[in-house]
Image 1: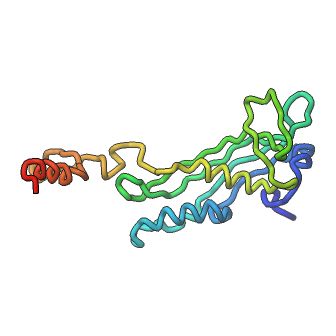
Image 2: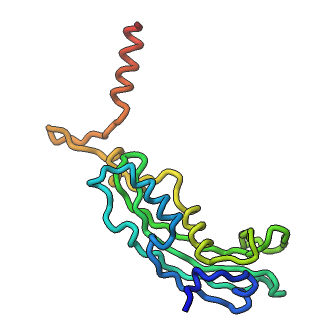
Image 3: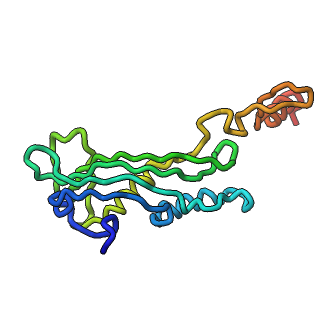
Length: 190
């Protein structure tokens, strides 16, 4: 029995059958997503590399059908969620991001166009057949932030406060020495 996430079908076939596909796979199942995450994690020292990051679950559901009253435009809706390991671009430490997608797509060939479906995004199909896995993977990749950063100041070592020898909290200022050097250069030009 084939895996419906990997089976190639036309959008019309999926929509006509009202196909519902349960997503319950590991990150390693999605090659493109895995390679992007791996490239990001190479910034970490080997001792900080998270074990088992490829084994995190991607779960969700896709539902195919037709949009509109005429039932002639194939569409897919659903959701998928995964927690990925990433490197914070402020402090360069490991962090976890929850990536969620909720596609609401019209599946159209490049020569098709439709009006009146403002609540949908158009997913242009390069070929007549598609693999639902490719849609899920591309949407997850597009949902990844360009620069991953901790959401909370307390979680980011570059922004969180530290305690000095006398017990006072002071803010970590990574460019403080640069600023003092610039002030010194203004006072004593070369």
